[in-house]
Image (cartoon, rainbow over all chains, first blue to last red):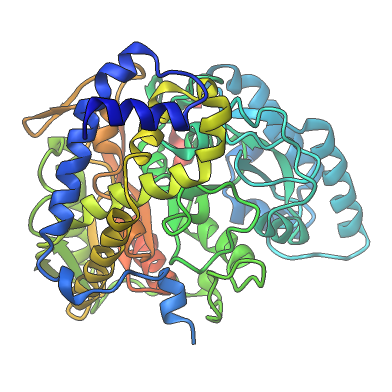
Length: 61
Length: 467
Protein backbone atom coordinates (compact mmCIF):
# COMPACT_ATOMS: atom_id res chain seq x y z
CA UNK A 1 0.00 0.00 0.00
CA UNK A 2 1.40 3.37 -0.95
CA UNK A 3 2.23 5.99 1.68
CA UNK A 4 -0.36 8.25 0.07
CA UNK A 5 -3.09 5.64 0.47
CA UNK A 6 -2.10 5.05 4.10
CA UNK A 7 -2.29 8.79 4.78
CA UNK A 8 -5.68 8.97 3.11
CA UNK A 9 -7.12 6.13 5.23
CA UNK A 10 -5.79 7.71 8.40
CA UNK A 11 -7.18 11.12 7.48
CA UNK A 12 -10.60 9.64 6.73
CA UNK A 13 -10.83 7.64 9.94
CA UNK A 14 -9.06 9.54 12.73
CA UNK A 15 -10.16 12.78 14.33
CA UNK A 16 -6.54 13.83 14.83
CA UNK A 17 -3.29 12.92 13.08
CA UNK A 18 -1.41 10.03 14.64
CA UNK A 19 1.45 11.16 16.88
CA UNK A 20 4.85 10.79 15.22
CA UNK A 21 6.01 7.64 17.07
CA UNK A 22 2.84 5.76 16.11
CA UNK A 23 3.03 7.02 12.54
CA UNK A 24 6.64 5.95 12.25
CA UNK A 25 5.80 2.51 13.62
CA UNK A 26 2.79 1.95 11.36
CA UNK A 27 4.58 0.58 8.25
CA UNK A 28 6.23 -2.20 10.25
CA UNK A 29 2.93 -3.01 11.97
CA UNK A 30 1.18 -3.23 8.61
CA UNK A 31 3.96 -5.44 7.27
CA UNK A 32 3.37 -7.83 10.17
CA UNK A 33 -0.35 -7.80 9.46
CA UNK A 34 0.26 -8.56 5.79
CA UNK A 35 2.40 -11.52 6.81
CA UNK A 36 -0.53 -12.79 8.85
CA UNK A 37 -2.82 -12.38 5.85
CA UNK A 38 -0.41 -14.30 3.65
CA UNK A 39 -0.33 -17.04 6.28
CA UNK A 40 -4.13 -17.18 6.31
CA UNK A 41 -4.24 -17.66 2.57
CA UNK A 42 -1.76 -20.53 2.86
CA UNK A 43 -4.11 -22.56 5.08
CA UNK A 44 -4.23 -25.95 3.35
CA UNK A 45 -7.99 -26.42 3.75
CA UNK A 46 -9.02 -22.86 2.88
CA UNK A 47 -10.82 -23.81 -0.30
CA UNK A 48 -12.98 -26.33 1.59
CA UNK A 49 -14.21 -23.86 4.18
CA UNK A 50 -17.04 -21.36 4.31
CA UNK A 51 -16.82 -18.49 6.79
CA UNK A 52 -17.49 -19.53 10.37
CA UNK A 53 -20.65 -18.69 12.23
CA UNK A 54 -20.32 -18.10 15.95
CA UNK A 55 -19.92 -21.62 17.35
CA UNK A 56 -23.09 -21.58 19.41
CA UNK A 57 -25.17 -20.75 16.35
CA UNK A 58 -23.67 -23.69 14.50
CA UNK A 59 -24.46 -26.03 17.37
CA UNK A 60 -27.80 -24.75 18.61
CA UNK A 61 -30.42 -27.49 18.60
CA UNK B 1 -12.23 -17.49 61.91
CA UNK B 2 -8.94 -15.71 61.26
CA UNK B 3 -10.13 -13.21 58.70
CA UNK B 4 -13.54 -13.21 57.14
CA UNK B 5 -12.23 -11.77 53.86
CA UNK B 6 -9.98 -14.82 53.40
CA UNK B 7 -12.82 -17.33 53.20
CA UNK B 8 -13.70 -18.81 49.84
CA UNK B 9 -17.06 -17.89 48.36
CA UNK B 10 -18.40 -21.35 49.19
CA UNK B 11 -17.16 -21.13 52.78
CA UNK B 12 -18.69 -17.70 53.25
CA UNK B 13 -21.97 -18.92 51.79
CA UNK B 14 -22.07 -21.77 54.31
CA UNK B 15 -21.43 -19.35 57.17
CA UNK B 16 -24.16 -16.97 55.97
CA UNK B 17 -26.68 -19.77 55.52
CA UNK B 18 -25.95 -21.03 59.02
CA UNK B 19 -26.39 -17.54 60.45
CA UNK B 20 -22.85 -17.39 61.82
CA UNK B 21 -21.89 -14.49 59.52
CA UNK B 22 -24.17 -11.79 58.18
CA UNK B 23 -23.91 -10.21 54.72
CA UNK B 24 -23.20 -6.94 56.53
CA UNK B 25 -20.16 -8.42 58.30
CA UNK B 26 -18.85 -9.93 55.06
CA UNK B 27 -19.28 -6.65 53.25
CA UNK B 28 -17.51 -4.71 55.99
CA UNK B 29 -14.66 -7.22 55.94
CA UNK B 30 -14.17 -6.62 52.22
CA UNK B 31 -14.44 -2.85 52.56
CA UNK B 32 -11.83 -2.90 55.33
CA UNK B 33 -9.52 -5.02 53.15
CA UNK B 34 -10.07 -2.67 50.21
CA UNK B 35 -9.25 0.29 52.44
CA UNK B 36 -6.08 -1.40 53.65
CA UNK B 37 -4.77 -2.70 50.33
CA UNK B 38 -6.28 -1.09 47.28
CA UNK B 39 -4.27 2.10 47.59
CA UNK B 40 -1.40 -0.03 46.32
CA UNK B 41 -3.22 -2.60 44.18
CA UNK B 42 -5.37 -0.07 42.27
CA UNK B 43 -7.94 -2.70 41.44
CA UNK B 44 -11.13 -0.66 41.91
CA UNK B 45 -12.14 2.10 39.48
CA UNK B 46 -15.45 2.70 41.26
CA UNK B 47 -16.18 1.67 44.83
CA UNK B 48 -19.87 1.41 45.80
CA UNK B 49 -19.38 1.30 49.58
CA UNK B 50 -22.63 2.95 50.63
CA UNK B 51 -24.77 1.06 48.13
CA UNK B 52 -23.05 -2.19 49.12
CA UNK B 53 -23.84 -1.59 52.79
CA UNK B 54 -27.48 -0.90 51.90
CA UNK B 55 -27.69 -4.05 49.78
CA UNK B 56 -26.08 -6.12 52.53
CA UNK B 57 -28.56 -4.84 55.12
CA UNK B 58 -31.54 -5.68 52.91
CA UNK B 59 -30.17 -9.15 52.22
CA UNK B 60 -29.57 -9.68 55.93
CA UNK B 61 -33.18 -8.70 56.62
CA UNK B 62 -34.36 -11.28 54.08
CA UNK B 63 -32.32 -13.95 55.85
CA UNK B 64 -33.77 -12.91 59.20
CA UNK B 65 -37.21 -13.60 57.70
CA UNK B 66 -36.10 -17.02 56.55
CA UNK B 67 -35.74 -16.11 52.87
CA UNK B 68 -32.53 -17.54 51.38
CA UNK B 69 -32.01 -16.89 47.67
CA UNK B 70 -29.23 -19.42 47.21
CA UNK B 71 -25.49 -19.78 47.37
CA UNK B 72 -24.70 -16.19 46.43
CA UNK B 73 -27.07 -14.67 48.98
CA UNK B 74 -25.19 -11.86 50.69
CA UNK B 75 -21.86 -12.59 49.00
CA UNK B 76 -19.81 -9.46 48.12
CA UNK B 77 -18.57 -9.51 44.52
CA UNK B 78 -16.98 -6.96 42.21
CA UNK B 79 -17.16 -6.73 38.41
CA UNK B 80 -14.76 -5.84 35.64
CA UNK B 81 -15.71 -2.36 34.53
CA UNK B 82 -17.24 -3.38 31.23
CA UNK B 83 -20.44 -4.86 32.64
CA UNK B 84 -23.33 -2.43 32.47
CA UNK B 85 -24.55 -1.66 35.97
CA UNK B 86 -27.66 0.46 36.40
CA UNK B 87 -26.80 3.79 38.04
CA UNK B 88 -23.13 2.82 38.48
CA UNK B 89 -20.63 4.18 35.96
CA UNK B 90 -19.19 1.73 33.46
CA UNK B 91 -16.04 3.07 31.83
CA UNK B 92 -14.50 0.14 29.99
CA UNK B 93 -11.27 1.46 31.48
CA UNK B 94 -11.47 4.36 29.03
CA UNK B 95 -11.56 8.13 29.01
CA UNK B 96 -14.19 8.03 26.30
CA UNK B 97 -16.75 6.40 28.65
CA UNK B 98 -15.44 7.82 31.93
CA UNK B 99 -18.80 9.37 32.85
CA UNK B 100 -21.08 6.76 31.31
CA UNK B 101 -23.81 5.56 33.66
CA UNK B 102 -25.93 2.77 32.16
CA UNK B 103 -29.67 2.74 32.68
CA UNK B 104 -29.92 -0.99 33.13
CA UNK B 105 -27.89 -3.99 34.22
CA UNK B 106 -26.24 -6.44 31.87
CA UNK B 107 -28.08 -9.76 31.85
CA UNK B 108 -25.41 -11.45 33.98
CA UNK B 109 -25.43 -8.57 36.48
CA UNK B 110 -29.18 -8.92 36.80
CA UNK B 111 -28.72 -12.66 37.35
CA UNK B 112 -26.15 -12.08 40.09
CA UNK B 113 -28.34 -9.47 41.80
CA UNK B 114 -31.30 -11.86 41.74
CA UNK B 115 -29.03 -14.51 43.24
CA UNK B 116 -28.22 -12.17 46.12
CA UNK B 117 -24.88 -10.56 45.20
CA UNK B 118 -23.66 -7.52 47.11
CA UNK B 119 -21.97 -5.33 44.48
CA UNK B 120 -18.82 -3.79 45.94
CA UNK B 121 -17.80 -1.91 42.81
CA UNK B 122 -16.22 -1.95 39.38
CA UNK B 123 -12.71 -3.13 38.65
CA UNK B 124 -9.74 -1.84 36.69
CA UNK B 125 -9.00 -3.27 33.26
CA UNK B 126 -6.97 -2.74 30.12
CA UNK B 127 -8.66 0.01 28.11
CA UNK B 128 -11.65 -1.46 26.26
CA UNK B 129 -10.14 -4.91 27.07
CA UNK B 130 -7.76 -4.51 24.10
CA UNK B 131 -4.53 -5.59 25.80
CA UNK B 132 -3.38 -8.31 28.15
CA UNK B 133 -0.96 -6.72 30.61
CA UNK B 134 -3.42 -4.95 32.93
CA UNK B 135 -1.71 -1.61 32.39
CA UNK B 136 -4.03 1.34 31.91
CA UNK B 137 -2.84 4.71 30.63
CA UNK B 138 -5.76 6.60 32.16
CA UNK B 139 -6.28 4.98 35.56
CA UNK B 140 -2.90 3.37 36.23
CA UNK B 141 -1.92 -0.30 36.21
CA UNK B 142 -3.59 -2.79 38.51
CA UNK B 143 -0.85 -4.36 40.66
CA UNK B 144 -0.19 -7.98 41.48
CA UNK B 145 -0.90 -8.85 45.13
CA UNK B 146 2.05 -11.26 45.14
CA UNK B 147 4.44 -8.42 44.24
CA UNK B 148 3.00 -4.97 43.55
CA UNK B 149 5.85 -4.20 41.15
CA UNK B 150 4.56 -6.96 38.88
CA UNK B 151 1.81 -7.01 36.26
CA UNK B 152 -1.53 -8.60 37.02
CA UNK B 153 -1.97 -9.60 33.42
CA UNK B 154 -5.10 -8.53 31.65
CA UNK B 155 -7.34 -7.42 30.42
CA UNK B 156 -9.26 -8.37 33.59
CA UNK B 157 -6.33 -7.26 35.77
CA UNK B 158 -8.35 -5.55 38.49
CA UNK B 159 -10.42 -8.70 38.89
CA UNK B 160 -7.28 -10.81 39.24
CA UNK B 161 -5.82 -8.53 41.89
CA UNK B 162 -9.03 -8.01 43.84
CA UNK B 163 -9.91 -11.71 44.05
CA UNK B 164 -6.35 -12.81 44.91
CA UNK B 165 -6.02 -10.18 47.64
CA UNK B 166 -9.37 -10.96 49.26
CA UNK B 167 -10.99 -7.63 48.36
CA UNK B 168 -14.03 -9.55 47.12
CA UNK B 169 -15.12 -13.20 47.02
CA UNK B 170 -15.28 -13.42 43.26
CA UNK B 171 -15.53 -11.42 40.08
CA UNK B 172 -16.63 -11.61 36.48
CA UNK B 173 -13.96 -11.06 33.87
CA UNK B 174 -14.21 -11.16 30.10
CA UNK B 175 -11.99 -13.09 27.72
CA UNK B 176 -11.40 -12.40 24.00
CA UNK B 177 -7.92 -13.89 23.71
CA UNK B 178 -7.14 -14.93 27.28
CA UNK B 179 -8.23 -11.99 29.43
CA UNK B 180 -9.73 -14.12 32.20
CA UNK B 181 -7.14 -16.90 32.20
CA UNK B 182 -4.04 -14.71 31.94
CA UNK B 183 -4.66 -12.58 35.08
CA UNK B 184 -5.94 -15.67 36.86
CA UNK B 185 -2.62 -17.40 36.18
CA UNK B 186 -0.43 -14.45 37.12
CA UNK B 187 -2.40 -13.60 40.27
CA UNK B 188 -2.78 -17.20 41.47
CA UNK B 189 -6.53 -17.63 41.20
CA UNK B 190 -9.02 -19.67 39.16
CA UNK B 191 -10.40 -18.25 35.91
CA UNK B 192 -12.92 -19.93 33.63
CA UNK B 193 -13.71 -19.02 30.03
CA UNK B 194 -16.87 -21.01 29.30
CA UNK B 195 -17.98 -22.30 25.90
CA UNK B 196 -19.01 -19.56 23.47
CA UNK B 197 -22.76 -19.22 23.88
CA UNK B 198 -22.82 -20.53 27.45
CA UNK B 199 -23.17 -17.10 29.12
CA UNK B 200 -24.96 -13.99 27.90
CA UNK B 201 -22.90 -11.00 26.80
CA UNK B 202 -25.82 -8.60 26.56
CA UNK B 203 -24.88 -5.37 28.30
CA UNK B 204 -21.17 -6.20 28.24
CA UNK B 205 -18.97 -3.76 26.29
CA UNK B 206 -17.64 -5.72 23.32
CA UNK B 207 -14.08 -6.07 22.14
CA UNK B 208 -14.71 -8.57 19.32
CA UNK B 209 -18.22 -10.02 19.16
CA UNK B 210 -17.36 -13.45 17.82
CA UNK B 211 -14.47 -13.97 20.26
CA UNK B 212 -15.79 -12.39 23.48
CA UNK B 213 -16.62 -14.67 26.42
CA UNK B 214 -17.86 -13.92 29.94
CA UNK B 215 -16.79 -15.95 32.97
CA UNK B 216 -15.97 -16.16 36.68
CA UNK B 217 -12.69 -15.39 38.45
CA UNK B 218 -12.50 -16.88 41.94
CA UNK B 219 -10.15 -18.28 44.57
CA UNK B 220 -11.31 -21.89 44.14
CA UNK B 221 -12.73 -24.12 41.43
CA UNK B 222 -15.84 -24.75 43.52
CA UNK B 223 -16.43 -20.99 43.66
CA UNK B 224 -16.11 -20.76 39.87
CA UNK B 225 -18.68 -23.55 39.51
CA UNK B 226 -21.08 -21.76 41.83
CA UNK B 227 -20.76 -18.47 39.95
CA UNK B 228 -21.16 -20.17 36.58
CA UNK B 229 -24.36 -21.83 37.79
CA UNK B 230 -25.74 -18.35 38.51
CA UNK B 231 -24.93 -16.79 35.13
CA UNK B 232 -25.06 -19.60 32.54
CA UNK B 233 -27.96 -20.22 30.22
CA UNK B 234 -29.86 -18.96 27.22
CA UNK B 235 -30.67 -15.26 27.04
CA UNK B 236 -33.28 -14.16 24.49
CA UNK B 237 -31.49 -10.80 24.38
CA UNK B 238 -28.22 -12.42 23.20
CA UNK B 239 -28.76 -14.38 20.01
CA UNK B 240 -25.44 -16.17 20.38
CA UNK B 241 -26.43 -17.90 23.61
CA UNK B 242 -27.35 -21.54 23.20
CA UNK B 243 -30.38 -23.55 24.27
CA UNK B 244 -28.21 -26.06 26.11
CA UNK B 245 -29.26 -27.14 29.63
CA UNK B 246 -27.13 -25.83 32.52
CA UNK B 247 -25.92 -28.72 34.69
CA UNK B 248 -25.27 -28.42 38.44
CA UNK B 249 -21.56 -27.76 37.94
CA UNK B 250 -20.68 -27.68 41.63
CA UNK B 251 -21.91 -31.27 41.96
CA UNK B 252 -19.85 -32.49 38.99
CA UNK B 253 -16.36 -31.48 40.07
CA UNK B 254 -15.43 -34.02 42.73
CA UNK B 255 -15.12 -37.09 40.51
CA UNK B 256 -11.33 -37.12 40.13
CA UNK B 257 -9.45 -37.96 36.94
CA UNK B 258 -9.16 -41.74 36.95
CA UNK B 259 -9.61 -43.08 33.42
CA UNK B 260 -9.64 -39.69 31.74
CA UNK B 261 -7.46 -39.10 28.68
CA UNK B 262 -5.46 -35.90 29.09
CA UNK B 263 -3.94 -34.51 25.89
CA UNK B 264 -0.61 -32.72 26.10
CA UNK B 265 0.49 -30.86 22.95
CA UNK B 266 3.94 -31.85 21.79
CA UNK B 267 5.02 -28.49 20.42
CA UNK B 268 4.54 -24.68 20.70
CA UNK B 269 3.39 -24.55 24.34
CA UNK B 270 6.80 -25.80 25.49
CA UNK B 271 8.69 -23.13 23.58
CA UNK B 272 9.34 -19.59 24.87
CA UNK B 273 8.68 -21.06 28.31
CA UNK B 274 10.22 -20.17 31.68
CA UNK B 275 11.91 -23.31 33.08
CA UNK B 276 10.19 -23.03 36.46
CA UNK B 277 6.80 -22.66 34.76
CA UNK B 278 7.57 -25.79 32.75
CA UNK B 279 8.59 -27.66 35.89
CA UNK B 280 5.39 -26.68 37.72
CA UNK B 281 3.14 -27.65 34.80
CA UNK B 282 4.92 -30.92 33.97
CA UNK B 283 4.96 -31.82 37.65
CA UNK B 284 1.21 -31.28 37.85
CA UNK B 285 0.59 -33.37 34.73
CA UNK B 286 2.67 -36.17 36.25
CA UNK B 287 0.64 -35.91 39.45
CA UNK B 288 -2.59 -36.25 37.44
CA UNK B 289 -1.17 -39.36 35.82
CA UNK B 290 -0.47 -40.64 39.31
CA UNK B 291 -4.18 -40.16 40.06
CA UNK B 292 -5.11 -42.57 37.30
CA UNK B 293 -5.37 -40.32 34.24
CA UNK B 294 -3.86 -41.38 30.94
CA UNK B 295 -1.52 -38.83 29.36
CA UNK B 296 -1.59 -38.71 25.57
CA UNK B 297 0.77 -36.64 23.49
CA UNK B 298 -1.02 -34.80 20.69
CA UNK B 299 -0.13 -32.54 17.79
CA UNK B 300 -1.77 -29.26 16.79
CA UNK B 301 -0.29 -28.50 13.35
CA UNK B 302 -2.66 -25.62 12.64
CA UNK B 303 -1.51 -23.18 15.33
CA UNK B 304 0.23 -20.70 13.00
CA UNK B 305 -2.92 -20.37 10.93
CA UNK B 306 -5.05 -20.11 14.05
CA UNK B 307 -2.93 -17.26 15.36
CA UNK B 308 -3.26 -15.39 12.07
CA UNK B 309 -7.04 -15.84 12.05
CA UNK B 310 -7.32 -14.59 15.64
CA UNK B 311 -5.17 -11.54 14.86
CA UNK B 312 -7.29 -10.54 11.87
CA UNK B 313 -10.69 -11.21 13.44
CA UNK B 314 -9.97 -9.34 16.67
CA UNK B 315 -8.67 -6.29 14.81
CA UNK B 316 -11.49 -6.23 12.26
CA UNK B 317 -14.27 -6.58 14.84
CA UNK B 318 -12.73 -4.18 17.38
CA UNK B 319 -12.12 -1.53 14.74
CA UNK B 320 -15.69 -1.86 13.49
CA UNK B 321 -16.98 -1.24 17.03
CA UNK B 322 -14.63 1.71 17.63
CA UNK B 323 -14.82 3.32 14.20
CA UNK B 324 -17.05 6.22 15.19
CA UNK B 325 -14.98 7.07 18.27
CA UNK B 326 -11.81 6.92 16.17
CA UNK B 327 -13.40 9.49 13.86
CA UNK B 328 -14.39 11.80 16.71
CA UNK B 329 -12.09 11.08 19.68
CA UNK B 330 -8.96 9.33 18.46
CA UNK B 331 -6.75 11.36 20.80
CA UNK B 332 -8.55 9.94 23.85
CA UNK B 333 -7.23 6.37 23.40
CA UNK B 334 -4.16 4.87 25.02
CA UNK B 335 -1.63 4.95 22.14
CA UNK B 336 -1.02 1.19 22.43
CA UNK B 337 -4.74 0.46 22.09
CA UNK B 338 -5.14 3.00 19.30
CA UNK B 339 -2.29 1.38 17.36
CA UNK B 340 -4.12 -1.95 17.32
CA UNK B 341 -7.37 -0.31 16.27
CA UNK B 342 -5.61 1.60 13.48
CA UNK B 343 -4.29 -1.68 12.08
CA UNK B 344 -7.89 -2.81 11.65
CA UNK B 345 -8.54 0.13 9.30
CA UNK B 346 -6.30 -1.57 6.75
CA UNK B 347 -8.16 -4.88 6.62
CA UNK B 348 -10.68 -5.67 3.90
CA UNK B 349 -13.95 -7.58 4.09
CA UNK B 350 -12.28 -10.38 2.13
CA UNK B 351 -9.46 -10.53 4.69
CA UNK B 352 -12.00 -10.87 7.49
CA UNK B 353 -13.93 -13.59 5.69
CA UNK B 354 -10.74 -15.51 4.92
CA UNK B 355 -9.96 -15.41 8.64
CA UNK B 356 -13.42 -16.77 9.43
CA UNK B 357 -12.92 -19.54 6.88
CA UNK B 358 -9.63 -20.53 8.49
CA UNK B 359 -11.31 -20.33 11.87
CA UNK B 360 -13.88 -22.89 10.83
CA UNK B 361 -11.19 -25.24 9.58
CA UNK B 362 -9.13 -24.86 12.75
CA UNK B 363 -12.16 -25.60 14.90
CA UNK B 364 -12.93 -28.71 12.88
CA UNK B 365 -9.33 -29.90 13.19
CA UNK B 366 -9.23 -29.21 16.92
CA UNK B 367 -12.48 -31.11 17.50
CA UNK B 368 -10.93 -34.05 15.63
CA UNK B 369 -8.09 -33.98 18.17
CA UNK B 370 -10.70 -34.19 20.92
CA UNK B 371 -11.89 -37.51 19.51
CA UNK B 372 -8.79 -39.03 21.13
CA UNK B 373 -8.60 -37.06 24.37
CA UNK B 374 -11.00 -35.64 26.94
CA UNK B 375 -9.12 -32.37 27.59
CA UNK B 376 -5.96 -30.55 26.62
CA UNK B 377 -3.43 -29.38 29.20
CA UNK B 378 -0.96 -26.52 28.67
CA UNK B 379 0.73 -23.79 30.67
CA UNK B 380 -1.70 -20.83 30.82
CA UNK B 381 1.02 -18.17 30.58
CA UNK B 382 4.58 -19.14 29.79
CA UNK B 383 6.29 -16.73 32.19
CA UNK B 384 5.64 -15.57 35.77
CA UNK B 385 4.24 -12.04 36.12
CA UNK B 386 6.64 -9.59 34.42
CA UNK B 387 7.59 -6.31 36.09
CA UNK B 388 5.33 -3.33 35.40
CA UNK B 389 6.96 -1.20 32.72
CA UNK B 390 9.20 -4.01 31.45
CA UNK B 391 9.76 -3.73 27.71
CA UNK B 392 11.31 -7.17 27.19
CA UNK B 393 11.07 -10.56 28.88
CA UNK B 394 13.27 -13.58 28.17
CA UNK B 395 12.01 -17.15 28.29
CA UNK B 396 13.34 -20.24 26.59
CA UNK B 397 15.77 -18.19 24.53
CA UNK B 398 13.05 -15.87 23.22
CA UNK B 399 13.19 -12.16 24.09
CA UNK B 400 9.88 -10.36 23.52
CA UNK B 401 7.60 -7.70 25.05
CA UNK B 402 5.42 -8.93 27.94
CA UNK B 403 2.33 -8.76 25.74
CA UNK B 404 3.79 -11.54 23.56
CA UNK B 405 3.65 -14.06 26.40
CA UNK B 406 0.24 -13.14 27.78
CA UNK B 407 -2.17 -14.74 25.32
CA UNK B 408 0.00 -16.95 23.10
CA UNK B 409 -1.26 -20.08 24.89
CA UNK B 410 -4.87 -19.04 25.36
CA UNK B 411 -6.31 -17.43 22.19
CA UNK B 412 -6.90 -20.82 20.46
CA UNK B 413 -9.89 -21.50 22.69
CA UNK B 414 -11.45 -18.10 21.91
CA UNK B 415 -11.08 -18.74 18.20
CA UNK B 416 -12.70 -22.17 18.57
CA UNK B 417 -15.15 -21.26 21.35
CA UNK B 418 -14.10 -24.19 23.58
CA UNK B 419 -14.19 -23.96 27.39
CA UNK B 420 -10.86 -23.37 29.13
CA UNK B 421 -9.88 -23.00 32.77
CA UNK B 422 -6.75 -21.69 34.46
CA UNK B 423 -6.01 -23.18 37.86
CA UNK B 424 -2.96 -22.47 40.07
CA UNK B 425 -0.44 -25.30 39.89
CA UNK B 426 2.77 -24.05 41.48
CA UNK B 427 5.36 -21.29 41.55
CA UNK B 428 8.06 -19.76 39.37
CA UNK B 429 10.40 -17.14 40.84
CA UNK B 430 8.08 -17.30 43.86
CA UNK B 431 5.12 -16.17 41.73
CA UNK B 432 1.99 -18.13 40.76
CA UNK B 433 1.85 -20.43 37.75
CA UNK B 434 -1.38 -21.49 36.03
CA UNK B 435 -2.30 -24.74 34.31
CA UNK B 436 -4.73 -24.36 31.41
CA UNK B 437 -7.34 -27.11 30.97
CA UNK B 438 -9.43 -26.94 27.78
CA UNK B 439 -12.34 -29.19 26.91
CA UNK B 440 -15.02 -29.98 24.37
CA UNK B 441 -17.97 -27.61 23.88
CA UNK B 442 -20.32 -27.50 26.89
CA UNK B 443 -18.01 -29.64 29.05
CA UNK B 444 -17.17 -26.97 31.62
CA UNK B 445 -18.06 -29.47 34.32
CA UNK B 446 -15.36 -31.91 33.20
CA UNK B 447 -12.81 -29.11 32.84
CA UNK B 448 -13.54 -27.93 36.37
CA UNK B 449 -13.47 -31.50 37.69
CA UNK B 450 -9.87 -31.80 36.53
CA UNK B 451 -9.15 -28.32 37.91
CA UNK B 452 -10.56 -29.36 41.26
CA UNK B 453 -8.25 -32.39 41.26
CA UNK B 454 -5.28 -30.13 40.53
CA UNK B 455 -6.34 -27.87 43.37
CA UNK B 456 -6.37 -30.82 45.76
CA UNK B 457 -3.06 -32.16 44.49
CA UNK B 458 -1.16 -28.94 44.63
CA UNK B 459 -2.63 -28.01 47.99
CA UNK B 460 -2.49 -24.46 46.80
CA UNK B 461 -4.44 -21.98 48.80
CA UNK B 462 -4.88 -18.32 48.00
CA UNK B 463 -5.35 -17.80 51.71
CA UNK B 464 -1.65 -18.49 52.21
CA UNK B 465 -0.66 -15.63 49.94
CA UNK B 466 0.79 -12.37 51.15
CA UNK B 467 -2.04 -9.98 51.96
